[in-house]
Length: 136
Image (cartoon, rainbow, N blue to C red; front, side, top):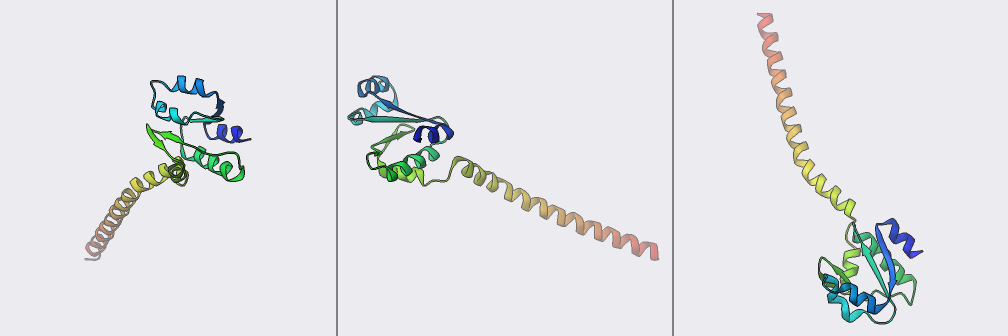
């Protein structure tokens, strides 16, 4: 169930042997997590969005008593469970992209509206001048 939800959001969940996890982490940023590889260890790898898998994991950590989030790593920075909660509370990747595009578009819409207003006033003035010349 958790694997399916994580797969839908572009992440994988694997239960791994600690010795293999330690060996696989050598030479990578995940090497910083070596001290956490004890007991039953599940590893989540996200390829695109990090926020949505964090939300799914937190949801399961609340629902299931034995399921606990011990540590995470993001861009080489080790994240304790409290920091993972902060990541999960961030807006999703799509929402952040939408906000960025909205921020880029709003000044352009303002400029277009201003230019349209100036052009329409120019047309009214030219129209008025044309009417006054034709009446003379």
